[in-house]
Amino acid sequence: MEANNGNQEREYIRRHHKHELERENQCSTTLVKHINAPVHIVWSLVRRFDEPQKYKPFISRCVVKGNMEIGTVREVDVRSGLPATRSTERLELLDDNEHILSIRIVGGDHRLKNYFSVISLHPETIEGGRIGTLLIESFVVDVPEGNTKDDTCYFVEALIKCNLKSLADISERLAVQDTTGGFP
Image 1 (spheres, rainbow, N blue to C red):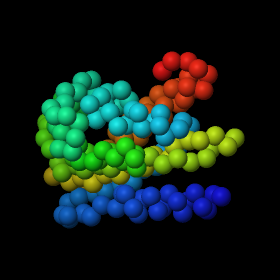
Image 2 (image 1 turned 30 degrees about the vertical axis):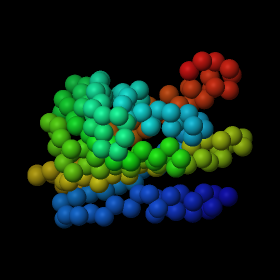
Image 3 (image 1 turned 90 degrees about the vertical axis):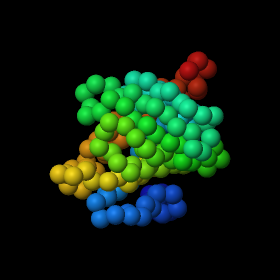
């Protein structure tokens, strides 16, 4: 079963998370997170392009310009403590059937130039035979002048890992409420 899960994970990555590096000064990474909550609960948070602050702790506010369709743009205010105050992001893909969200950063006062990310969610069986979620997030971004590929990927990975930990915590809390008849 373990090998099968690894094969499935590799197939999801091959299908949804292979980024072509267009320039020499780009880096790309794929992160995997196992969440002890069903896909529908995790997706209810991830798909909210208009409310990323629900699980992304570094975002204080989001204003959407458009109707939640491909090309919709959001202006995100970043909490203090990061080397940015705002980011402008465009929705590239929102697939409710396949549970895939993709965004591109198109502006802001940060150093994440040509940033593009894909998040995909996949059901998996976790301990005790319960249903959980395999979340895969990948990105490609330009390496800023004066930085290395390793430094750039490390920084972005640290932000994503923080977001994914928060997403897992919130989703798992909602899953417990969902199974006990509580209200989210």
